[in-house]
Picture 1: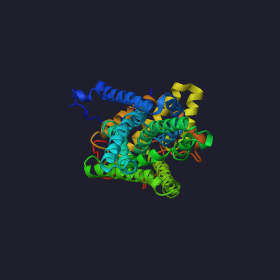
Picture 2: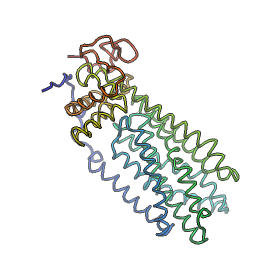
Picture 3: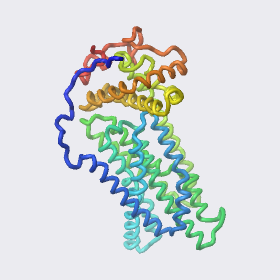
Length: 444
Protein backbone atom coordinates (compact mmCIF):
# COMPACT_ATOMS: atom_id res chain seq x y z
CA UNK A 1 0.00 0.00 0.00
CA UNK A 2 1.32 3.43 -0.94
CA UNK A 3 2.51 5.60 1.90
CA UNK A 4 1.20 9.14 2.13
CA UNK A 5 4.05 11.66 1.66
CA UNK A 6 5.15 13.35 4.85
CA UNK A 7 3.41 16.54 5.83
CA UNK A 8 4.40 18.88 8.66
CA UNK A 9 2.12 19.00 11.68
CA UNK A 10 0.37 22.28 12.44
CA UNK A 11 -2.17 23.43 14.91
CA UNK A 12 -5.79 23.45 13.87
CA UNK A 13 -6.86 26.94 12.80
CA UNK A 14 -10.42 26.15 13.95
CA UNK A 15 -9.44 25.27 17.51
CA UNK A 16 -10.88 28.48 18.88
CA UNK A 17 -14.23 28.05 17.16
CA UNK A 18 -15.63 24.92 18.79
CA UNK A 19 -18.90 26.66 19.67
CA UNK A 20 -20.02 28.79 16.69
CA UNK A 21 -22.49 31.63 17.06
CA UNK A 22 -26.13 30.85 16.29
CA UNK A 23 -25.94 32.55 12.87
CA UNK A 24 -23.04 30.27 11.94
CA UNK A 25 -24.97 27.07 12.52
CA UNK A 26 -25.66 24.95 9.48
CA UNK A 27 -29.45 25.04 9.74
CA UNK A 28 -29.40 28.85 9.91
CA UNK A 29 -26.93 29.28 7.03
CA UNK A 30 -29.00 27.08 4.74
CA UNK A 31 -32.50 27.50 6.14
CA UNK A 32 -32.59 31.30 6.11
CA UNK A 33 -31.73 31.83 2.40
CA UNK A 34 -33.95 28.92 1.30
CA UNK A 35 -36.89 30.37 3.21
CA UNK A 36 -36.23 33.87 1.88
CA UNK A 37 -35.99 32.68 -1.73
CA UNK A 38 -39.09 30.49 -1.44
CA UNK A 39 -41.18 33.37 -0.09
CA UNK A 40 -39.81 35.72 -2.75
CA UNK A 41 -40.63 33.17 -5.43
CA UNK A 42 -44.23 32.83 -4.27
CA UNK A 43 -44.71 36.59 -4.17
CA UNK A 44 -43.11 37.21 -7.58
CA UNK A 45 -45.18 34.40 -9.07
CA UNK A 46 -48.38 35.99 -7.78
CA UNK A 47 -47.39 39.47 -8.99
CA UNK A 48 -46.42 38.35 -12.50
CA UNK A 49 -49.52 36.17 -12.88
CA UNK A 50 -51.72 39.06 -11.69
CA UNK A 51 -50.22 41.38 -14.30
CA UNK A 52 -50.17 38.96 -17.24
CA UNK A 53 -53.11 36.67 -16.52
CA UNK A 54 -52.87 32.90 -16.42
CA UNK A 55 -52.67 32.41 -20.19
CA UNK A 56 -50.19 35.22 -20.67
CA UNK A 57 -48.08 33.86 -17.81
CA UNK A 58 -47.89 30.40 -19.39
CA UNK A 59 -46.99 31.83 -22.81
CA UNK A 60 -44.36 34.11 -21.29
CA UNK A 61 -42.94 31.25 -19.25
CA UNK A 62 -42.67 28.97 -22.28
CA UNK A 63 -40.88 31.62 -24.36
CA UNK A 64 -38.68 33.05 -21.59
CA UNK A 65 -37.20 29.68 -20.66
CA UNK A 66 -35.70 29.12 -24.13
CA UNK A 67 -32.37 31.01 -23.70
CA UNK A 68 -31.84 29.89 -20.08
CA UNK A 69 -30.19 26.49 -20.75
CA UNK A 70 -27.83 28.01 -23.31
CA UNK A 71 -26.72 30.83 -21.03
CA UNK A 72 -26.28 28.59 -17.98
CA UNK A 73 -24.32 26.07 -20.09
CA UNK A 74 -22.06 28.88 -21.36
CA UNK A 75 -21.24 30.05 -17.84
CA UNK A 76 -20.77 26.48 -16.66
CA UNK A 77 -18.32 25.96 -19.53
CA UNK A 78 -16.31 28.96 -18.36
CA UNK A 79 -16.18 27.40 -14.90
CA UNK A 80 -14.83 24.02 -16.04
CA UNK A 81 -11.23 24.67 -14.98
CA UNK A 82 -12.18 24.86 -11.29
CA UNK A 83 -15.90 24.03 -11.17
CA UNK A 84 -17.78 25.73 -8.38
CA UNK A 85 -20.44 23.85 -6.40
CA UNK A 86 -23.80 23.49 -8.06
CA UNK A 87 -25.47 24.89 -4.96
CA UNK A 88 -23.80 28.26 -5.60
CA UNK A 89 -25.20 28.39 -9.13
CA UNK A 90 -28.65 27.30 -7.96
CA UNK A 91 -28.60 29.99 -5.30
CA UNK A 92 -27.45 32.62 -7.81
CA UNK A 93 -30.17 31.75 -10.33
CA UNK A 94 -32.86 31.62 -7.64
CA UNK A 95 -31.74 34.94 -6.19
CA UNK A 96 -31.89 36.61 -9.59
CA UNK A 97 -35.24 35.07 -10.55
CA UNK A 98 -36.95 35.57 -7.19
CA UNK A 99 -35.37 37.99 -4.70
CA UNK A 100 -33.74 40.43 -7.13
CA UNK A 101 -36.76 40.44 -9.45
CA UNK A 102 -39.11 41.10 -6.53
CA UNK A 103 -36.95 43.98 -5.26
CA UNK A 104 -36.82 45.45 -8.77
CA UNK A 105 -40.57 45.23 -9.42
CA UNK A 106 -41.52 46.80 -6.09
CA UNK A 107 -38.83 49.52 -6.10
CA UNK A 108 -39.23 50.44 -9.78
CA UNK A 109 -43.02 50.68 -9.49
CA UNK A 110 -42.79 52.85 -6.39
CA UNK A 111 -40.17 55.15 -7.94
CA UNK A 112 -42.09 55.53 -11.22
CA UNK A 113 -45.32 56.42 -9.41
CA UNK A 114 -43.48 58.93 -7.22
CA UNK A 115 -41.88 60.61 -10.26
CA UNK A 116 -45.23 60.69 -12.07
CA UNK A 117 -46.87 62.35 -9.05
CA UNK A 118 -44.04 64.84 -8.62
CA UNK A 119 -43.83 65.84 -12.30
CA UNK A 120 -47.46 65.24 -13.35
CA UNK A 121 -46.04 63.69 -16.52
CA UNK A 122 -46.47 59.87 -16.71
CA UNK A 123 -44.51 59.56 -19.98
CA UNK A 124 -41.53 61.40 -18.52
CA UNK A 125 -41.80 59.28 -15.38
CA UNK A 126 -41.54 56.06 -17.40
CA UNK A 127 -38.46 57.33 -19.25
CA UNK A 128 -36.71 58.57 -16.11
CA UNK A 129 -37.61 55.40 -14.25
CA UNK A 130 -36.19 53.14 -16.95
CA UNK A 131 -33.04 55.21 -17.50
CA UNK A 132 -32.09 56.34 -14.00
CA UNK A 133 -33.95 54.30 -11.39
CA UNK A 134 -34.13 50.80 -12.88
CA UNK A 135 -30.38 50.39 -13.54
CA UNK A 136 -29.50 51.38 -9.97
CA UNK A 137 -32.16 49.19 -8.36
CA UNK A 138 -31.71 46.13 -10.56
CA UNK A 139 -27.92 46.04 -10.59
CA UNK A 140 -27.80 46.55 -6.83
CA UNK A 141 -30.30 43.75 -6.29
CA UNK A 142 -28.32 41.37 -8.49
CA UNK A 143 -25.01 42.41 -6.90
CA UNK A 144 -26.39 41.29 -3.53
CA UNK A 145 -26.06 37.66 -4.65
CA UNK A 146 -22.38 38.23 -5.46
CA UNK A 147 -21.83 39.88 -2.09
CA UNK A 148 -23.44 36.98 -0.24
CA UNK A 149 -21.37 34.35 -2.03
CA UNK A 150 -18.24 36.47 -1.60
CA UNK A 151 -18.81 36.78 2.15
CA UNK A 152 -20.24 33.39 3.09
CA UNK A 153 -18.80 31.05 0.42
CA UNK A 154 -15.38 32.69 0.26
CA UNK A 155 -13.58 29.41 -0.36
CA UNK A 156 -15.49 29.03 -3.66
CA UNK A 157 -14.80 32.62 -4.77
CA UNK A 158 -11.16 32.87 -5.74
CA UNK A 159 -10.90 34.98 -8.90
CA UNK A 160 -12.38 36.68 -11.92
CA UNK A 161 -13.96 33.60 -13.49
CA UNK A 162 -15.87 32.84 -10.28
CA UNK A 163 -17.20 36.39 -10.24
CA UNK A 164 -18.22 36.21 -13.90
CA UNK A 165 -20.01 32.89 -13.44
CA UNK A 166 -21.97 33.87 -10.31
CA UNK A 167 -22.86 37.26 -11.83
CA UNK A 168 -23.91 35.75 -15.16
CA UNK A 169 -26.11 33.06 -13.63
CA UNK A 170 -27.74 35.59 -11.27
CA UNK A 171 -28.50 37.90 -14.19
CA UNK A 172 -29.81 34.98 -16.25
CA UNK A 173 -32.33 34.23 -13.50
CA UNK A 174 -33.32 37.90 -13.30
CA UNK A 175 -33.74 38.17 -17.08
CA UNK A 176 -35.85 34.99 -17.07
CA UNK A 177 -38.42 36.47 -14.67
CA UNK A 178 -38.36 39.83 -16.44
CA UNK A 179 -38.92 38.13 -19.81
CA UNK A 180 -41.88 36.19 -18.43
CA UNK A 181 -43.41 39.51 -17.38
CA UNK A 182 -42.71 41.34 -20.65
CA UNK A 183 -43.69 38.49 -22.95
CA UNK A 184 -46.81 37.69 -20.94
CA UNK A 185 -47.87 41.36 -21.02
CA UNK A 186 -47.19 41.53 -24.77
CA UNK A 187 -49.36 38.45 -25.31
CA UNK A 188 -52.17 40.10 -23.36
CA UNK A 189 -51.84 43.21 -25.54
CA UNK A 190 -52.12 41.05 -28.68
CA UNK A 191 -55.22 39.38 -27.30
CA UNK A 192 -56.88 42.77 -26.92
CA UNK A 193 -55.65 44.34 -30.17
CA UNK A 194 -55.85 41.23 -32.33
CA UNK A 195 -52.17 41.24 -33.25
CA UNK A 196 -51.08 38.09 -35.08
CA UNK A 197 -47.94 36.60 -36.60
CA UNK A 198 -44.84 38.70 -37.15
CA UNK A 199 -46.85 41.90 -36.62
CA UNK A 200 -47.72 40.96 -33.05
CA UNK A 201 -46.25 42.66 -30.00
CA UNK A 202 -45.30 39.23 -28.65
CA UNK A 203 -43.15 38.44 -31.70
CA UNK A 204 -41.44 41.85 -31.54
CA UNK A 205 -40.75 41.49 -27.82
CA UNK A 206 -39.42 37.95 -28.30
CA UNK A 207 -37.10 39.08 -31.10
CA UNK A 208 -35.64 42.00 -29.15
CA UNK A 209 -35.30 40.35 -25.72
CA UNK A 210 -34.70 36.65 -26.49
CA UNK A 211 -33.14 36.58 -29.97
CA UNK A 212 -31.10 39.79 -30.14
CA UNK A 213 -30.15 40.47 -26.54
CA UNK A 214 -30.41 37.42 -24.25
CA UNK A 215 -26.96 38.39 -22.97
CA UNK A 216 -27.91 41.96 -21.98
CA UNK A 217 -28.54 41.47 -18.26
CA UNK A 218 -25.64 39.01 -17.87
CA UNK A 219 -23.36 41.48 -19.65
CA UNK A 220 -24.23 44.29 -17.23
CA UNK A 221 -23.87 42.22 -14.08
CA UNK A 222 -20.67 40.51 -15.24
CA UNK A 223 -18.96 43.91 -14.78
CA UNK A 224 -19.87 43.75 -11.09
CA UNK A 225 -18.68 40.14 -11.02
CA UNK A 226 -15.30 41.13 -12.45
CA UNK A 227 -14.98 43.73 -9.68
CA UNK A 228 -15.65 41.09 -7.03
CA UNK A 229 -13.29 38.69 -8.79
CA UNK A 230 -10.44 41.20 -8.73
CA UNK A 231 -11.19 41.90 -5.07
CA UNK A 232 -10.89 38.17 -4.35
CA UNK A 233 -7.31 38.26 -5.63
CA UNK A 234 -6.24 40.78 -3.01
CA UNK A 235 -5.10 39.77 0.45
CA UNK A 236 -7.39 40.44 3.38
CA UNK A 237 -4.92 42.98 4.75
CA UNK A 238 -5.65 45.26 1.79
CA UNK A 239 -9.26 46.30 2.43
CA UNK A 240 -9.34 49.32 0.10
CA UNK A 241 -9.13 47.40 -3.21
CA UNK A 242 -11.49 44.74 -1.85
CA UNK A 243 -14.13 47.44 -1.40
CA UNK A 244 -13.39 49.76 -4.31
CA UNK A 245 -13.18 47.11 -7.05
CA UNK A 246 -16.73 45.74 -6.53
CA UNK A 247 -18.11 49.29 -6.25
CA UNK A 248 -16.35 50.29 -9.47
CA UNK A 249 -17.73 47.26 -11.28
CA UNK A 250 -21.22 48.00 -9.96
CA UNK A 251 -21.06 51.60 -11.19
CA UNK A 252 -19.96 50.43 -14.65
CA UNK A 253 -22.82 47.93 -14.71
CA UNK A 254 -25.30 50.66 -13.80
CA UNK A 255 -23.91 52.97 -16.50
CA UNK A 256 -24.09 50.34 -19.24
CA UNK A 257 -27.59 49.34 -18.13
CA UNK A 258 -28.72 52.97 -18.18
CA UNK A 259 -27.39 53.48 -21.71
CA UNK A 260 -29.14 50.32 -22.88
CA UNK A 261 -32.49 51.31 -21.34
CA UNK A 262 -32.19 54.83 -22.71
CA UNK A 263 -31.47 53.70 -26.27
CA UNK A 264 -35.17 53.84 -27.18
CA UNK A 265 -35.15 57.60 -26.54
CA UNK A 266 -32.31 58.19 -29.02
CA UNK A 267 -34.57 58.18 -32.04
CA UNK A 268 -36.10 55.59 -34.35
CA UNK A 269 -32.85 53.65 -34.77
CA UNK A 270 -31.39 54.42 -31.35
CA UNK A 271 -31.73 50.82 -30.15
CA UNK A 272 -29.87 49.42 -33.16
CA UNK A 273 -27.20 52.13 -32.96
CA UNK A 274 -26.44 51.38 -29.29
CA UNK A 275 -26.58 47.64 -29.98
CA UNK A 276 -24.12 47.76 -32.90
CA UNK A 277 -21.72 50.41 -31.60
CA UNK A 278 -21.63 49.60 -27.92
CA UNK A 279 -23.34 46.41 -26.74
CA UNK A 280 -21.95 43.99 -29.34
CA UNK A 281 -18.32 45.21 -29.00
CA UNK A 282 -18.58 45.16 -25.20
CA UNK A 283 -19.93 41.62 -25.33
CA UNK A 284 -17.09 40.52 -27.62
CA UNK A 285 -14.46 42.19 -25.39
CA UNK A 286 -15.77 40.59 -22.22
CA UNK A 287 -16.03 37.20 -23.93
CA UNK A 288 -12.37 37.47 -24.93
CA UNK A 289 -11.43 38.54 -21.39
CA UNK A 290 -13.06 35.59 -19.65
CA UNK A 291 -11.69 33.06 -22.18
CA UNK A 292 -8.20 34.55 -21.77
CA UNK A 293 -8.62 34.31 -17.99
CA UNK A 294 -9.64 30.68 -18.36
CA UNK A 295 -6.47 29.91 -20.32
CA UNK A 296 -4.42 31.76 -17.73
CA UNK A 297 -5.91 29.53 -15.04
CA UNK A 298 -4.79 26.43 -16.94
CA UNK A 299 -1.29 27.89 -17.20
CA UNK A 300 -1.30 28.45 -13.43
CA UNK A 301 -2.16 24.79 -12.92
CA UNK A 302 0.78 23.70 -15.09
CA UNK A 303 3.18 26.01 -13.26
CA UNK A 304 2.17 25.38 -9.65
CA UNK A 305 1.52 21.63 -9.46
CA UNK A 306 5.07 20.36 -10.26
CA UNK A 307 6.03 21.10 -6.63
CA UNK A 308 3.57 18.43 -5.50
CA UNK A 309 4.63 15.98 -8.20
CA UNK A 310 8.21 16.37 -6.95
CA UNK A 311 7.27 15.12 -3.48
CA UNK A 312 4.96 12.31 -4.54
CA UNK A 313 1.57 13.86 -3.86
CA UNK A 314 0.82 13.81 -7.61
CA UNK A 315 1.89 11.49 -10.39
CA UNK A 316 4.80 12.66 -12.58
CA UNK A 317 2.64 13.46 -15.63
CA UNK A 318 -0.30 14.97 -13.77
CA UNK A 319 0.70 18.68 -13.96
CA UNK A 320 0.57 18.38 -17.75
CA UNK A 321 -2.76 16.52 -17.78
CA UNK A 322 -4.45 18.79 -15.24
CA UNK A 323 -3.37 21.85 -17.23
CA UNK A 324 -5.17 20.67 -20.37
CA UNK A 325 -8.97 20.55 -20.69
CA UNK A 326 -8.67 17.95 -23.47
CA UNK A 327 -6.49 15.69 -21.34
CA UNK A 328 -8.88 16.05 -18.41
CA UNK A 329 -11.79 14.99 -20.58
CA UNK A 330 -9.84 11.96 -21.86
CA UNK A 331 -9.11 10.92 -18.26
CA UNK A 332 -12.79 11.11 -17.27
CA UNK A 333 -13.85 9.15 -20.35
CA UNK A 334 -11.26 6.45 -19.64
CA UNK A 335 -12.46 6.10 -16.05
CA UNK A 336 -16.11 5.90 -17.15
CA UNK A 337 -15.42 3.27 -19.80
CA UNK A 338 -13.27 1.03 -17.61
CA UNK A 339 -14.56 1.56 -14.07
CA UNK A 340 -18.02 3.16 -14.34
CA UNK A 341 -19.70 6.48 -13.59
CA UNK A 342 -18.60 6.59 -9.96
CA UNK A 343 -14.96 6.37 -11.05
CA UNK A 344 -15.46 9.15 -13.61
CA UNK A 345 -16.95 11.30 -10.86
CA UNK A 346 -13.95 10.59 -8.63
CA UNK A 347 -11.59 11.63 -11.43
CA UNK A 348 -13.56 14.85 -11.93
CA UNK A 349 -13.32 15.56 -8.21
CA UNK A 350 -9.60 14.82 -8.27
CA UNK A 351 -9.15 17.32 -11.12
CA UNK A 352 -11.14 19.97 -9.25
CA UNK A 353 -9.22 19.51 -5.99
CA UNK A 354 -5.87 19.61 -7.79
CA UNK A 355 -6.88 22.83 -9.53
CA UNK A 356 -7.92 24.39 -6.23
CA UNK A 357 -4.56 23.34 -4.81
CA UNK A 358 -2.73 25.05 -7.69
CA UNK A 359 -4.70 28.26 -7.22
CA UNK A 360 -4.11 28.18 -3.46
CA UNK A 361 -0.37 27.82 -4.01
CA UNK A 362 -0.46 30.60 -6.60
CA UNK A 363 -2.06 32.94 -4.07
CA UNK A 364 0.50 31.84 -1.48
CA UNK A 365 3.27 32.74 -3.91
CA UNK A 366 1.95 36.30 -3.84
CA UNK A 367 1.13 36.52 -0.16
CA UNK A 368 -2.62 36.46 -0.79
CA UNK A 369 -3.63 33.07 0.60
CA UNK A 370 -4.54 34.21 4.11
CA UNK A 371 -3.96 32.63 7.49
CA UNK A 372 -5.74 29.40 6.59
CA UNK A 373 -3.30 28.44 3.84
CA UNK A 374 -1.76 25.42 5.56
CA UNK A 375 -5.07 24.02 6.81
CA UNK A 376 -6.70 24.36 3.41
CA UNK A 377 -3.70 22.85 1.65
CA UNK A 378 -3.79 19.84 3.95
CA UNK A 379 -7.51 19.35 3.23
CA UNK A 380 -6.92 19.42 -0.52
CA UNK A 381 -3.96 17.06 -0.39
CA UNK A 382 -5.94 14.61 1.74
CA UNK A 383 -8.82 14.71 -0.75
CA UNK A 384 -6.42 13.99 -3.62
CA UNK A 385 -4.74 11.15 -1.78
CA UNK A 386 -8.11 9.50 -1.05
CA UNK A 387 -8.93 9.41 -4.80
CA UNK A 388 -5.52 8.50 -6.18
CA UNK A 389 -6.27 4.78 -6.78
CA UNK A 390 -8.89 5.58 -9.43
CA UNK A 391 -7.57 8.89 -10.72
CA UNK A 392 -3.92 8.10 -11.36
CA UNK A 393 -4.45 5.33 -13.96
CA UNK A 394 -6.93 7.53 -15.82
CA UNK A 395 -4.63 10.55 -15.76
CA UNK A 396 -1.65 8.44 -16.84
CA UNK A 397 -3.67 7.16 -19.80
CA UNK A 398 -4.64 10.75 -20.69
CA UNK A 399 -0.98 11.77 -20.60
CA UNK A 400 0.02 8.96 -22.97
CA UNK A 401 -2.87 9.79 -25.31
CA UNK A 402 -2.64 13.58 -25.47
CA UNK A 403 1.00 14.50 -24.77
CA UNK A 404 2.76 15.70 -27.97
CA UNK A 405 6.07 14.59 -26.44
CA UNK A 406 7.01 12.55 -23.42
CA UNK A 407 5.37 14.26 -20.44
CA UNK A 408 7.82 15.89 -18.02
CA UNK A 409 8.81 14.11 -14.85
CA UNK A 410 9.70 16.45 -12.03
CA UNK A 411 12.64 16.33 -9.62
CA UNK A 412 12.00 13.82 -6.91
CA UNK A 413 11.15 11.16 -9.52
CA UNK A 414 14.70 10.58 -10.76
CA UNK A 415 14.94 13.33 -13.40
CA UNK A 416 16.98 16.51 -13.33
CA UNK A 417 17.21 19.81 -15.12
CA UNK A 418 13.56 20.80 -15.42
CA UNK A 419 12.70 24.34 -14.55
CA UNK A 420 9.96 25.45 -12.22
CA UNK A 421 7.81 28.45 -13.03
CA UNK A 422 9.85 31.07 -14.87
CA UNK A 423 13.33 30.29 -13.61
CA UNK A 424 15.74 27.44 -12.93
CA UNK A 425 14.70 24.75 -10.53
CA UNK A 426 15.06 25.69 -6.89
CA UNK A 427 14.17 23.61 -3.84
CA UNK A 428 12.37 26.67 -2.45
CA UNK A 429 9.78 27.75 -5.04
CA UNK A 430 8.64 30.64 -2.87
CA UNK A 431 12.15 32.09 -2.90
CA UNK A 432 14.60 32.42 -0.03
CA UNK A 433 11.87 33.55 2.37
CA UNK A 434 8.56 31.76 2.11
CA UNK A 435 5.45 33.74 3.13
CA UNK A 436 4.42 30.54 4.93
CA UNK A 437 7.69 29.33 6.53
CA UNK A 438 5.99 26.42 8.30
CA UNK A 439 5.25 24.80 4.96
CA UNK A 440 7.87 23.42 2.61
CA UNK A 441 6.76 20.78 0.07
CA UNK A 442 10.33 19.55 -0.24
CA UNK A 443 10.76 18.78 3.44
CA UNK A 444 11.14 15.05 4.06
